[in-house]
Length: 430
Image (tube, rainbow, N blue to C red; front, side):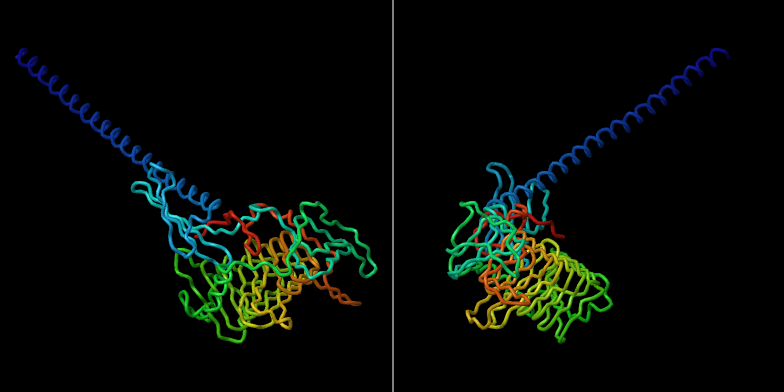
């Protein structure tokens, strides 16, 4: 009896040990499998991180290359494909399309199974040439500088040059550029903007042949509109005599078009859109980032801020009177310009910049310019005029600053007169 109990206990112990061994094997299998899966997924994660990083690096490299060598991109809106580095898989596809006066650059890159696409906004790099303050045509007369005026930077002047003058009983007490290598002689006419720029702008005056059309009435009651730059252009059109933009928030790949007048109120929030009309009036207190294209008139009331990179342009080729008036205490971060295709002196375009206003960028005026404000950047002018309560003066600048050195070198500008050989990144587009 005792012998049988000892044998039974012996077998019970062996069976218990077997179960314990099986449990340990099962546990080790789970741990080993978990470890193998961890190594596998970690390897996949590292591969993905390397792939994504490589694609991002290729996109950045492509944009850097485009910045210093924009000729790598086709100028006819076709995509260009090339390898960034020899003997390395680094294929990128890059395409440039105009967005107003700036360029949308679309870059796609692929590395193994990883692929990504990005959109960026570019302009010409202001710092890629020597900073120019003033270009005024040679009409065989002096440019007279009066009052508390300053002119700094490279200047293209009439053969007679600049002189100080007295006006309204006030003597000159400012600063004139005197460095010999900064003074150059100008021509009798202003340089012509490139045809590609003019063509890109004139396209906006034919809304019916482009984009996804919507009526302006569809914006009534709409609080917010966003259209991605990855999607087709959306154009809101109005056939009314005037269109008042108020209580709307519009961002992205959007154009607002009217063949008549558009009034932009301070309650309109507009970001990176294009506004096209015969006449565009921006009401006092508005702040936003827009590109304005008009066929005859643009008026900014007092205290308007157009943020970088904005644009005000009259580029319609019709023989009409073209007029830009920027009132007191405004700020425009970008370009203000007129293109006049007619040489009729009776239709000479006019730009007026009032006291307290600052143009941080460029002003291009192939007609008469009255400057009472300041230019931080470059001013191209055919002729200055000044109306005072007592007299009318030609080629006089009074109490104004034109400073080509005050604009940052990484500012994105337009190629009005000079060949800027580099491009400047502005922002990512979504």
